[in-house]
Length: 446
Image (cartoon, rainbow, N blue to C red; front, side, top):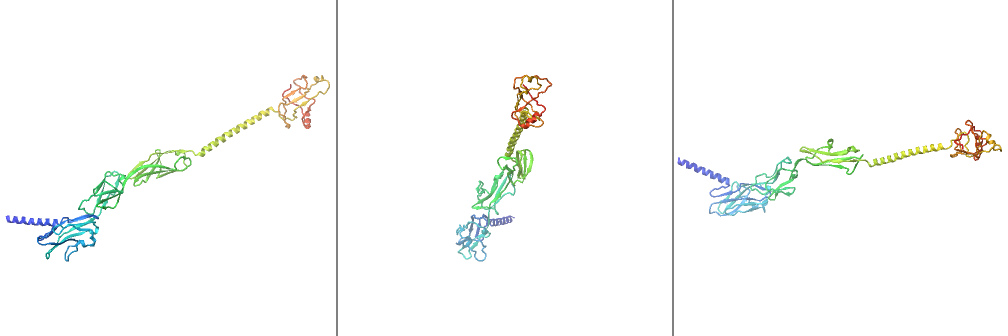
């Protein structure tokens, strides 16, 4: 019973040792073996890879050659990696001919992806050995992973990724728009993200740079403002265009215009043609997208009268005032003429005389008192004498004076007639007509 237990324990230890040997990459056979420290390596393109290993062999043989190859070694002797033109200047054997078999490969290329084996030869016949399993080399590049949809205020993490898990964790460097950032790990945290974080990102490690990727940060409208064209004074009758601008991602598609609190138009621009004073006021623009909306500051629009209107008003005032003065002047002249006409003798059917001289018909002056008619030496008008007279007007006289100081007594019923009238300046035709006139009316007799 005890013997069976010992046998079972011995078999278990043998299996465990074999598993450990295979896991560690050591394949030993009669004292011959190769131990690969890393059975798989993930290396960055352009980086330097070190394949570490050790080998063992029985005492006695002397190692004459140790090298790495990409072939399994079955059949003919595989080529030495140092002799491969593709690896010329890039591969270096760091081991020795005793136990160390480390290899270094610089500037790793994608074509370097393969399995690599270590092989050594001794001075004994058949004394050569190649480690089984080898080292599986994978080559990767860098890629920046960003979320598909980023909204301002979110917590965002950018990751510098590889296609395989790197054997050696390198130091990373991050760049945004070619400016270096502070992070030195494979992740860049933006918490919270803002629109200023948008841009081109890339990561780098061991002189290997990833391609650039663009981070788009979506956000609602910012910096909404209103501009006016043309600028300067706005006069009635002109055309004015208001333009709304804003910063947003995605770009703003919905614009609403307000005058005061009333909505007046839609669209990025608002044009007012033939503007008038009723269009004066405060105007605002509201921009909106799927992530929010924002109202601009108010723009005050003052519509001025057109300069020609002032000219028209001034001309109207001048013309109107001149017209009033002209009418008043006409009325004044007309009234003056009427007043002047009232003081002048009106033409009558009888003739108008400027001077009439009379003589007594007898030589005795006493006879004058016995006559019914009065004789006057002079008849004078107070007004201007007009040589042309109408046929139907009467002639008033302003003053009649006696040539002599004779008192003539008249009754109220008797008329005043002249026995003899002598024309001093009148036309003979008018004189004959005057003699035939039935009567003469005088305004004053002295």
